[in-house]
Image (cartoon, rainbow, N blue to C red; front, side, top):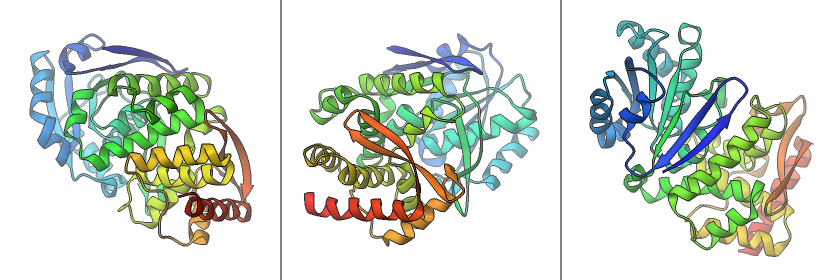
Length: 349
């Protein structure tokens, strides 16, 4: 079992990573037994709900559940409202807890509700996907989507703790596990060439992988909790990735979109030998390198990006594996980068 400490300015907490974690016992170490609203989606709850509730009840917690239809299409204000109405009906108070049992959609929605319900309450993250474990469960970003784009309504709200049971990954479909690998590969490209090489060589366990990624994110969040500068590098591949997700009406998953974004930017900006390494590690993990959308449409979708400043979009561009830079570009330059990257992906592969 590994423990990573996150020293955010508004709240410090630990991320516990290991196989077969006892949720109830570990949660009891940081919060006295109370009423819990366990939030999950129908897929995750059918796999892990009963055992999770039993663990929490054995530790003295009184459990309630809110289960919604799986998928990005449920990460909306309407579903958030339904959750809050049920919380009122169940008499959930500020001294109680919300529990996010699931992947990124569950964690984002639960955290957003926790940030605003009764003007703010505590919540905990129990990530069940690799993607949520290495990225969205840590750092306090919470949000729901609008029809115009991803994560347009949200807040920074740190969890009380994150309990990551890597046994849960064994139930993931190959495609969903691969989405988590996309975010893991991202950390290697933006921050840690040694981590990238370990992933490239399949020389790292799930527990070690999650711990390495969480440590990187914890270091960055400690410097820039509210995403005003240095934390922007965590968005590598996301500006294009979010555009792909939105234009596909979320039939293309988050990790797949990020993979497409990273492939284009690495092909456009890295030396060819390093670009090849990135493209090969993505294809080895069965991740896509491109999407069948018009380049102009993808570029224009950046207008909905949260990092847009007037007519400029802040993008993360790779310098080498392990190092990136932030650059503000206009939409014309952004479109040129995407076209150059897409053309080079085709020629390299």
